[in-house]
Structure formats: structure tokens, C-alpha cells
Image 1: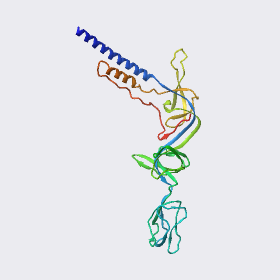
Image 2 (image 1 turned 30 degrees about the vertical axis):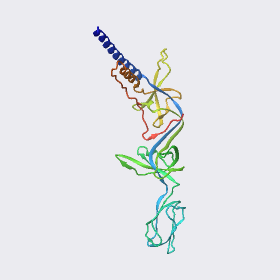
Image 3 (image 1 turned 180 degrees about the vertical axis):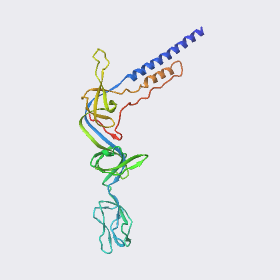
Image 4 (image 1 turned 90 degrees about the horizontal axis):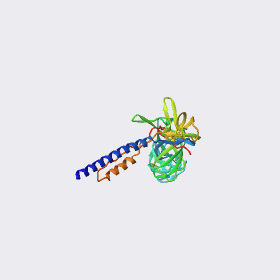
Length: 326
């Protein structure tokens, strides 16, 4: 009698395991078969190139003597004093032209004293302007051709994560620096509203290189490439035969500007059309739930797992970043 009962229990366990296995296969296939869709949108599309750097003073320089063997009569400033451009800093006993401040700022150090003699080119003081800041970021060689003087930039500073500063490109390096076979170029951005910033704070700048109003755009992974041809998969509500399944149609398109999220469609689509996106991998939720069910059955150890989820396909513009307007 006991043997018969155990035989029934074993058959039930085997049946339950088999059911869960085939059910999980079916769920996985259904999840894999599901596709995502997006709507062709129209609005403002921006392309930005980003780089990191740090806050620096626009003016930070040594003040030097111009003549040899001049004896200092008087040093008129001390470290920590603010000066304006043209203020006298050092006078000489022979009555020759004094050394003056080349720009407004703060005298951060003085290295000479009255009675000393100076030589041509000798640094006598250092000047830093703590009210006029810039940041120098490094831009990849693939993107540097898109950077131009006077382009606008949004700047974030690690010390103030909730605040965005604005700036303009003032200089683009003519020579790059190579590291591990990749060249980067210095791009200088003047910070227009530097309130509370300090020299040395780390920055991240996004330079606006292209912007288009009323652009038609779709997610980048919606566009497929076949040789020189680009196309998207357009879906409709039904296939016209009474089935609830959506009909699909391959449409050739031409593209324009792009950022890491969206690409402009210049030909081939209309606003509001529904397009198909690559399917995501199967969710791990169903198999995880089955594992938990097995663990709770008769005290037996179960199994769990799933397929990693991720975004499939798509291209990006290297260092480009930005958004599509709604």
C-alpha cells in the first residue's frame, strides 16, 4: 500500500516538473515574440557633444619685470589684494615705468620686496581672476570637426548637481593629444554665470552642435540598414483580414541629424505613424516565479533564472548626446 502511494506521489512530481518546464518554454517564446512600437514624432531635435574638464580662471598668470637690474623702490600690493587693470604694483628707484596689473583680479602671491633688483622676465607676482571662469574639456577626434567658436553649451558641476550653468565656446585647440591610439582636443568654454564656482571643480559640458525645429524623428534603433538603404517597419492596427494581428510594411527612409536617442527622418514617414522597434529579450519574471513555486512544493529545491534584458540594435553618434523635443 505504501509503495503504491509513493508511486503516485513520484508521478505527480514528475508531471508537475514537466508542466512547469513546457509552460516556461511557452512563456519565453511569447515574451520573445512581443515587439515594441513607437510613434513618429515631430518637434525640436538637438545634437550635443559632451566632454569633461574642470573650472579654471580665464586670467591666471605671472606678472613679470620688463627690464634688467632695476632696483625696486616700493611694492604697493600684498597677496590677497584685488586690483584693476592698470593699477601700479611695483615702482623703481630710477623712476622708470612701474609694473602694472595686466588685468583685473586678485594678487595671489608676491615674490619680491623693496630694495631688491629684478631681471627681465622675472616673475614678481601672480594674478588670478576669481570672478571670470572657463572650463577646458577634451573632445574626441571624431567629433572635433563639429565644434565651432561661439557655440552654446550647458555645463554641470559636480559640486552643484541640481544647477546648470551656460557658456560659449571660445577656443578649439589646433593640436590634439594622443593616448592609446585615440586623439582628443582641448575645447575652451567661457562660463557666463559662474556664481559660487571655484577653481578646480570638475565639470561636464554639452555643446550644442545642431538643432532643428519641427523635425520628424524616431528612436535610433527603429532604423535598419541594408547596404546603402535605410528602412523602418511600419505597423497598422490590423491586417485587413479580420485578424487582430498588426500588419507590417517595410518603408525606405532617408535620415538627417541624430543624437544617441533619436534620428531625424527627412523622407519616407509621416507624423503619427506607428513603427516597430526591435523586440526585447524574454523577461525573467515568469521563470523566477516558477522557481519559487518549485521551492515551495513539498520542501524540494527548485530552479530560477531568466534571460538578461537589454536594448537591441540601434546606433549612436559617438560622443553625441541630446534629446528630441515633444
